[in-house]
Amino acid sequence: MAEAGDGNILNSQPKCSPTAITDAPITDPGSTIKESKSAAALKKSSRYRSRSLSASSNDSYSSASYTGSSSDEDDVSPREKLQKSSSGFSDFCVKNISQHAFGRREIEIAEQEMPGIMALRRRAGDDKPLKSAKIVGCTHINAQTAVLVETLVELGAQVRWAACNIYSTQNEVAAALAEAGYPVFAWRGETEEDFWWCIDKCVNAEGWQPNMILDDGGDATHLMLKKYPAMFKMIKGIVEESVTGVHRLYQLSKAGKLSVPAMNVNDSVTKTKFDNLYSCRESIIDSLKRTTDMMFGGKQVVLCGYGEVGKGCCQALKGLGCVVYVTEIDPICAIQACMDGFRVVKLNEVVRNVDIVVTATGNKNVVTREHMDKMKSGCVICNMGHSNTEIDVNSLRTPDLTWEKVRSQVDHVIWPDGKRIVLLAEGRLVNLSCSSLPSFVVSITAATQALALIELFNAPHGRYKSDVYLLPKKMDEYVASLHLPTFDAHLTELSDEQAKYMGLNKAGPFKPNYYRY
Image (cartoon, rainbow, N blue to C red; front, side, top):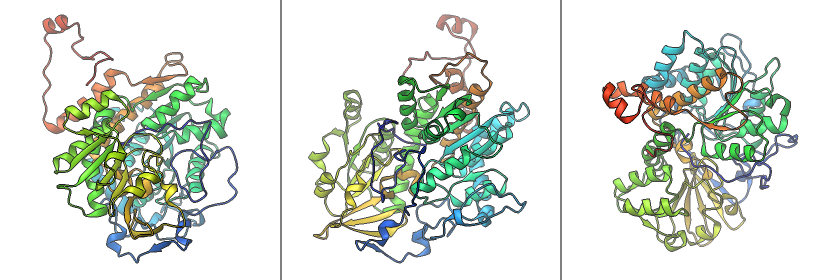
């Protein structure tokens, strides 16, 4: 959900070591994966020390998780279990189907804080605008996403769902979806092979021809295009919500390889402002508090990247009394940071003194081993970007360094002289790996995604060509209007004279497409 993009190019993915686990599609899904590498491979090394974990520390990453239900200490792969729901349904693969009751309660809590998507469910439920839609979903699987999944089904769709991140799945929520009869393939702590296997199970199933893709990061699109090109040509449309995935779609379009229309909902105003800015403003603090119990006042922080995600993180950290530095490549973003009161620096200038390093650039190798060698003991490193390419974690997997597990998603990496840095979520998206997102913000994103799916699925032939489109402004405004009643907000209406003077329709849209909110 809230993320920066990455610069990976689909057709030239870098090869990584077998112990590396990555969100990016580094493995060609078109080739058969012959050996499975466990995510815990590093633990078998003599340089990895594991502390005994209390139940509380094991589940400290998320209060939105039933105690003990999302432990990553269980070595039995869900792929080796034979599970059935209470109705006998078995077309799923989750950690433990017996946890479904706890997941259902999480979903019910989320529904209370997601007024927009619930209003859309009520308004469009009778019309079934997604009747005959067969959607492959590849997103974070949590209580908020579950509300979206069940809304799409209420609107007439059939779905098959996988996770876009190996650490962000709430196991009990996945169990609740499976219990309700939805094919879901996801669990927390998947290996790289598991990750692609789960997406493949959603795409390629007996008697199933998907006609829509809802993607977060571009992995389902990538797999289908590479492994099932004939099936990909039958797709009516793709809806992509991340900077990462949108970047890949534009690359495909530029190379002439995008044969279906795609909707870029990441750059819709409601998504960019709310999911990237306001959500990150709250969740960065939540993530760091849960994992480190730190006091923020007086801490020195460097934030790499001052896009919407970076802006939100900087606002929150500054508000709690941190001394915040910003690194940027873009002079426009850099001068925005200056005007907001932040000092713009190169990472090398401050890396020896800072207490926290946060990446939000969407790039790769923003924080390198050379930087980490210079950091002081106790420095905390985390990533708020979608893919785990920003921090060069693989460079830390060397014989001279010792990894010590402290909590779930918290590792100490110890240098020979005793210096240690604190690495969160192995460089993955920290707010979804170590905490939970505000449901209200996800409601805005979910409503945007649902409307984009409805628009693409019902569009007459020829309206959308094989290219990448932005969500129409009118839909952006509609999503915002669905959420205003929560605040008891009352919109002013234009008079006929005012509308004529401004050259607007009284019902909107109220801003031109080039307007910068």
